[in-house]
Image (cartoon, rainbow, N blue to C red; front, side, top):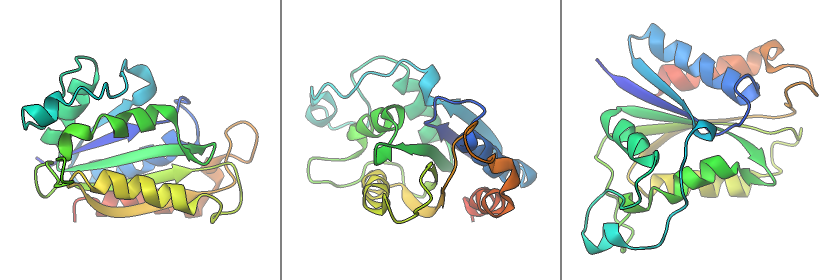
Length: 189
């Protein structure tokens, strides 16, 4: 059975980002894909300690022992990954950035990827600003950095003008729900 990991970088368990991630998960489940959803905010993850243990030992694992070991294992055991994150202050949330920083073991000092081949990653981003072009550069940079690990960047979407409790709910935005469903449906194709 194929497996997919869904990482949610929002602190809101019932917010727009989580709702769109659930649509992607529904599409995966309908295809018989086993999914695991993790809210990064629930984990204890330290930032990269720049100890270079992974580089000195030439391994794709981290010396820091915390909840990231679980995430690394789930990533390695998955055929595909969906990263869902809101944009705060022109970039992904701190929770999501911590995850990215701890992917350091999957990049060699020469920037050669160390992630097992064939794993795909897609992205669901949300923001409260209506202008979709406002944070294009940091979003592209984030996806590029994830791709340096060897994960094959597949699809991405951006839901704009969303803010749970303050703007019309994402549940009423069928265009975005359909895009999120498509992210899940196409992840492993």
